[in-house]
Length: 260
Image 1: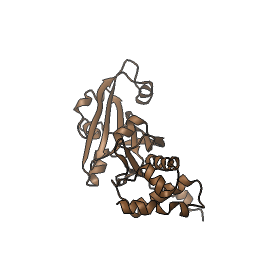
Image 2: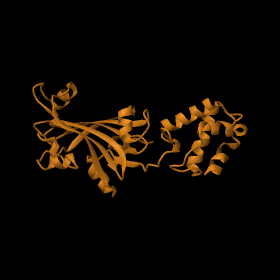
Image 3: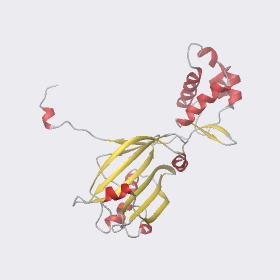
Image 4: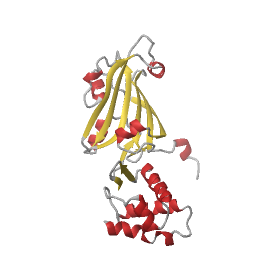
């Protein structure tokens, strides 16, 4: 492995002479080496001092390139150990056309699912929960928060809120919230989701095993019963490097009549 990393940096200065800034050229050189498999998941990079000496550039340039790669999830830094190529995470696709639970979605892929409970309790509702769930200040809200893990990889943090009347005992929820709701005839039948980009804060990044500031997906979902009543308000954070949401789009009948 030492020979492989030496080859990555040995002729860098000469090859990158026409490229500026140098830290971007170094970043691309390392990314290309990872993509080619010259260095693989778990492999250690030389120290910043060694890379600077091999590439004939300053340590400041090396540090900036490495920090960018850590933020993008290509590299990971372990305090006291060094810098390593990040583990390869298989991306998961979820359709936006079906309302399924995380447990059901992962089970269809043959993945082993488990949850790490972060919170299960009854609380006074927040202003957002009151507005979305139609609760008064005197009513209570049940909160169910979990770290969702598939095949050993943490993929999402889900924080669901429901009326305490609907879910009086959050601690009784097992592996699937929707299964618990279905048992009482209150499983939602449709939902509206809003998806936006997010940079992960330190607490969420630590739970998802990614660097602080890494890209994530913030998903806010409001779920409804067949009667039209709102039953669930969920705010989730998904790993941006591991999750894709896919939607199938169809041209409407009116549009199909218009010639291209």
